Length: 82
Image 1 (spheres, rainbow, N blue to C red):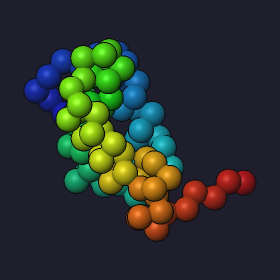
Image 2 (image 1 turned 60 degrees about the vertical axis):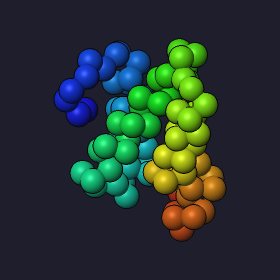
Image 3 (image 1 turned 90 degrees about the horizontal axis):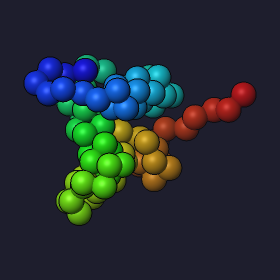
């Protein structure tokens, strides 16, 4: 996780889960900042301290990271279930 702030246990768990996701197979080190921002915004939403712009930014980042069905479609990604 990027340095510069104290990450909570829940944020660390979300970070690990995101980097274990099928989408993470398409990410490289250039995605670290975007994933970190997603984690920060998600944390604010989960603890009810998020502003409207943070919720909107999380939605945008989720799409750009391929974490939503619409984002996956836009990126041309398909997760095959076996």
